[in-house]
Image 1 (cartoon, rainbow, N blue to C red):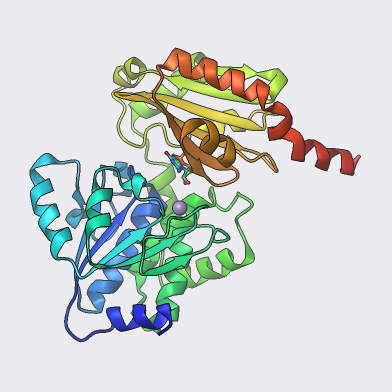
Image 2: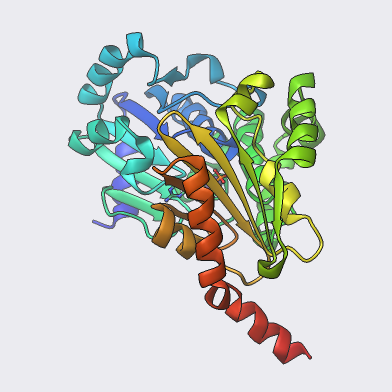
Length: 349
Ligand code: 5GP
Ligand code: MN
């Protein structure tokens, strides 16, 4: 039987299934939007659904329908209960990631589970752990794929305003507000359908982009004036944010989101990075412009990966050592990183 038929058979069974939905560590709007979009859909199909996230997520996502029932696996008192739920699950949906390590401790539980696993994602180099994969690196967002999967499952009539708003949020943010090169004709067609279903695009943009705390705005000002470094010879700019900086501005989950884009917005800059000091090392976000690919750089040197123009990774060194390593590697790899760009520029001259 074709996998899609098997998937349809699983979700269309008349007896309610116990379903866990999960997504990557520190979920963003695409991760949470796809999870709650699928959760709301599966509930309408009569299933018993639980969304488990491996960590907390920004409060500017709290408006999504079903948010109140999401369980954060990092809360110690919930872990035993979640373990039992995963153990007895009939199906597990893994959304917006395709390497189990992005689930952190939850990954082992999912790996061991005998449930029917579904993986919907748009990242590069997926692991092969699911019984049904719905993957495309061409998709701008996992929410785009979720929309298409619901249609393919023959359930277009189950789509509603709540589901549409969850999916719209993921598409809006993963396209950078419809600015990135992944903003295709198809994504506009899907978006038109979502607005047609009642998604309030202006409200969602305001909730996600224009709901800052005063501390967050002050932190942005501080980072721009005191923490931005420019490596002009490498067309690179980066922010390095310490734990102390984060404490000073009472930083909440999500407060550093988008910061890296300010570095990339500088005229002439093609590579941007954000280094954030954590308890056990440094978390890194990479962004790049045009043909410069940062995902391979992140994978080769910082145990990470991602998309061509937006990737991430980690470093177990301290901040000073991490920055030294980064600056060294950027200079060493300049010719590789910028090669394609230079070729394109030469062609255009
Ligand atoms: P962000 O900088 O917004 O945290 O992440 C941008 C993209 O980089 C994500 O969509 C994801 O594809 C990728 N990414 C971020 N952190 C990691 C990581 O630690 N490992 C891998 N493989 N990819 C990451
Ligand atoms: Mn995504």
